Length: 449
Image 1: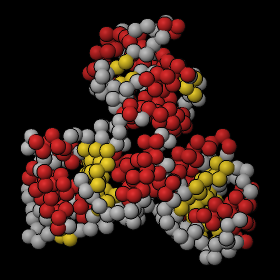
Image 2: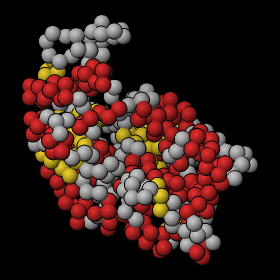
Image 3: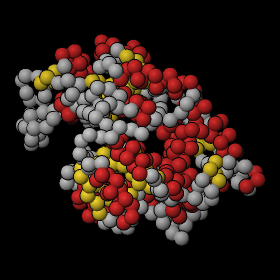
Image 4: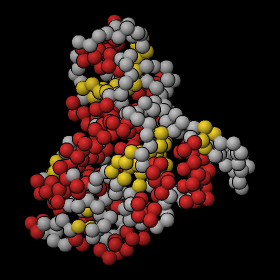
């Protein structure tokens, strides 16, 4: 048994079962904790939002409001209390999702007094060091490559060195950057991601470095840039190769001097930022063509980390697929429970040009559109970014022998699921409204049931 905690902590129990509340109250009060409880989810949320508790025991399923919704609101409001989810046997997958959303741990009903005490003791351990394996668990897969990647991340995280993450689109570069941050000594500070490809050219300097009121037309108030927001923490510059040469020169100086030139201010501001950059382009080719500064490249690639495309570590495909299948089965209350052997073979043989992002989207589509428990070959429709884009996967036994048949049925299922709302259906399918309407007209699909 774990050592009893020595300090008294404030604990809130939110559970609509009176027997559960009373049992937890007695056990934890005897250990010296100050315990409050409620069976009303809405009232419990109001109590929790006061941010007066060290720990919250939160039931998943309650009338009026579910535990996951409460957890989401607590995280949105930056409530500091740790959360332990309480779940029944049939909702374990919900508890797993809750932990992905920030819950500390979960207990499965019925649980013993010892299990409750241990879970609470774990939450209140004086050593607040990070659980390395828990932080790494977001990187799904157990292949030799994934083990090497996780080992590299652990080593990189212990330093403050600038990191350049390279890899194709959809390989999970931002997730890797987040993991490095969570395992670093800056984990309790901000992780600020910046998509450099989405920044407007004439506002990029202001977005990165901030500006003073009146520094340019439209600057009605002073504003911090991403560097100031990330002070003491980590700044992640995604698709850094899209930054203009002018901003590259200023970025180089910021990295060298750890000083930020706020627009409209004559003196730079000191910042303490750990920089992680990423790109899906070949930076050396960008340098040769004059689109990227060589001196900046050497500054940001102190520690290079290349993420392999999914087709080069196929041993992880099924682990990742099943992870997202479980996730979206819960999210959409889907009938899907498993993949057929033919479906598994198809997933393993496909090249995944969109990498993990494409695999994730494929699993989400299956959970939304598949109306039976076992996913068959004919249920899968790939939307690749290259290599021919869509891949016909129908088998002759199903009678669906052409890509047209498969796509038509796929669109019909999506329309039905979203109650023939064109905007939502098009967004889900990854196409615009005009393209969807053209396909509907070509396939003879009616615009309403």
